[in-house]
Amino acid sequence: MTATHMTTDSHDPPRAGKPPEALSRVLAGVRAHARPIVLPLVTAALVIAAWEALVRVRNIPDVLLPAPSAVAVRLWETLPFLLQQAVPTTLETIAGFAISTVLGIALAVLVSASRLAREALYPNIVFFQLIPKIALAPLFIVWLGIGSSSRITFSVFISFFPVVVATLTGLTSVDRDLLRLCKAVGARPWKVYTEVRFPAAVPHIFSGLKIAITFAMIGVIVGEFITAQAGLGYMILFAASQAEMALIFAAIVLLCVIGLALYALVVLAEALALKRYGD
Amino acid sequence: MITDEAPFQAITARGVRKVYSTPSGAVEAVAEASFEIARGDFVSILGPSGCGKSTLMLMVAGLEPATSGALTLDGLPVAGPQISAGMMFQDPTLMPWRSVLDNVLVPVSMRRPVEADDLARAEHLLRMVDLWQFRDKRPRELSGGMRQRVALARALVTDPRILLMDEPFSALDAITRDEMGLALARIWDTTRKTAIFITHSIREAIFLSDRILVMGRRPSTIIEDIRVPFPRPRTPAVEAEPEFNDLYLHLKASIHRTTPAMH
Image 1: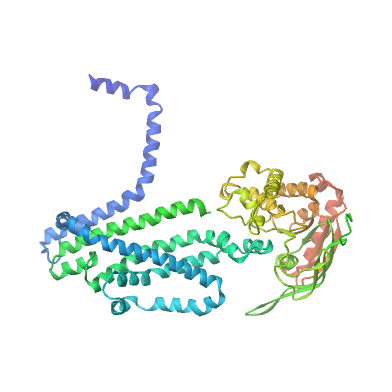
Image 2: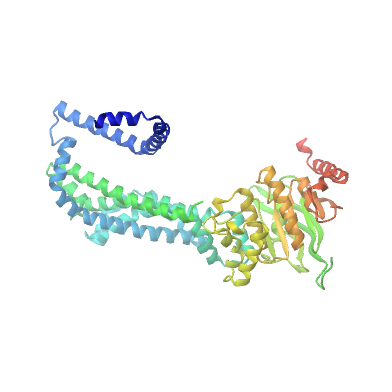
């Protein structure tokens, strides 16, 4: 009886006239919005499936390349332990990123505000970027020991430069006529900074911060490789020494999740800032 | 037109010259400019692109020093930025993070705290440009013409003695441009501020001005100084007058004479 009822209902002309159209529009909307999410997920799923198939078909041993399913099992088994290791890694990444943000913005303001600073400092900052910083990592241990301060410092060294460059671009990209107007009305230079240059730089600063957050994490992981005390980077190294390939991948998966979450937070902050400062 | 004991001439320029030194050598932006602008006159400077009109305006505003020659505002030599000048540029140059009202108040708030009088004046100006109901909107929510009207209100918020406008309507479409010309003429009639209006539109210059200075290129000097005879307030009907057309053709010929390379 219910079935008959449903059939008559769906064939009811006065109602069926509109809802299907509205429904198809909603579906089209969902499709348009889902596309940028679904498409990369499908691609990733295909790659993972191919990996799984390859390992099973070719019978590749776990010590060489564990199947994604084996990684998932290992991740599930060791999750409490891995999460515990993830705490220092995450906190140090956030600390490195925060310091980079403050230092990068301060340096950019200094370099853009003072000609002396620009001429004396900026070429050196750029030159410093050309040094392969990984090669400097052991020095940080000599100078700062094997504690978190040496990992955070290294993370800052790796991640502050994009913030400097992006902020500098923002501070100097202000419309020339707007600056003229400010000058003409007798605005103090610091007022021009706080009221015009800095707000205009906000969208640029966030493009630097998005790069900095990923670099900050790389810095901490490299630091953990070298200081070898705790953290997911250390876990990866330890697992490698034990030929625990599945555990390495499990740690990497967790790193990706944390990295993505931190990046998403920066993107969220950016969206909020652009609402206020965007064009 | 002489309203008080202050000098009759609001702006004087004598032998003003501007040379920029660039890595590829000296560039002469303005070869020689001498003129006097009477208090309350609306003067257009008309000329081809690259004739140094904008540089001349920046020198009057005190934002670029003249290489040689003398400039005075109200009898005082121009040395450094002139707070008594309101300015408009080709782009509205509004701050996207400020509301319409706060953008109008920028010339005040950049210098000192905003007071009740400033707010009253900003309201008056925004009503005059028909944007009071948009006072809380952001610039991105406005059309190009509306933004430029915000810029006009901003230029007038400090009640400046002179108004300097550098091709303020040239980025607008033709219809909006005509509307802006009418709005500016109407507002100018109520304030009668000494104004320099830089443009390369001959019709706009005739419609708005009491006087038109034509600037040539290479050398960039003032090659013509014409008084516009039409009474005020003006309506679009002046464009139908035979004199308007005569003046238009005359100015067109004189501009073309200065740019032989363009033929």
